[in-house]
Image 1 (cartoon, rainbow, N blue to C red):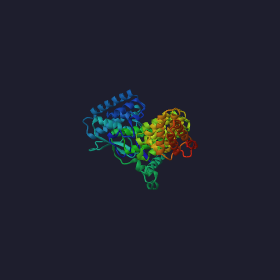
Image 2: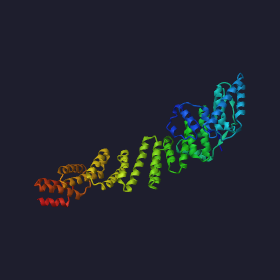
Image 3: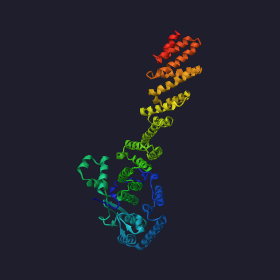
Length: 519
């Protein structure tokens, strides 16, 4: 199997400047920390108050904060001691002495899976932690250095512009971490799916060859701060190999905060999808992971895919098991993680439409209406949303006897959602409400009010001549008004009302019969 050096830094290609730590792929507020010390260290880092010793120590669990502070003091005191003891020596001799003294003092046993704190806990080290140790010391001693990366190794060069003294903390062939063939295959396949590897290249080259090419990248220098990020990369890979995808993703997010390179981004995406696929329960964690994946549009994760995943969650939680509260929590958590406004709107549409539809199917039209109002705000021309909205109105009005209140609601919706004016079901509902109030007003001797609603009915009926209206209700309403005027001796008025009614219900028996009687 191909060998990946002890921190897998060959995967890093492009360095993104410190000013870009606010990149939308990772938000500081979303990071998970395993200790107060780690949280406080990252908070200082966010404020540009970087303590590199603490940054390396933060990725560990063996030492409490007070022990870290104590070891830090002892370490820097030892550096001061070495400074005085090696002062005056020639450059090469001084570096060699420092190398040997620090090695004998701190580095007892090489261990592949290792964190920086292990050096101070039991003397175990690998090429990452040991290189960090020397770099921290050289920083304090003001000895110029550079950290070099190779596909299977990392090491330090003192006085890189002059003597170029190489400090190897392990053998270049011994300081590597082995990644499984399954990891390589999946990594390369995702690159192909994202079209970062062409189908032709994918078909013509061996997976291991492609992995070496696209994973390792070019050799280069890294800063000490970036090395701290690579320690988190390493830890993420350890956890991934141990089948702990969510923990791996958590560590990779912190790696990205410290070193947001192109390859760390690629691994961040890979581990994010791995964690999401492994987390089967539709809970808040699942929602957070989905929301984070929504940020990877450049990797081929289109917004429609995120919406599709949310639809599946809707079917499982809401439609399939009726877990309304859990579904609401999932939706809230998801949208809090999503930054794309269009995607947020698409998710809101699904949430409100399906929530309203469930309530409507339970004959809870009044409770469903606020959800459908939101769907119409999001997608005014959506016919399905309009249909369920109107049906919910019908359910609500069936239990509401005051038609003036109904008319007020309908007029309000007509003004708020102008797209409903193209929906003849809605127009017929408005016309029918006016017609009923026209009939009721005349029946209670409120003639002026009746005429007002007759005019409103005719305005809608004339504007939308193809409406399907209740012929009997038209007959009753206009006949009732005609009888009123006939009894008042206003025969011409009564005849005109009957003619008007027949315009909207030409074959209505009641209107025709009264017309014959008046003649």
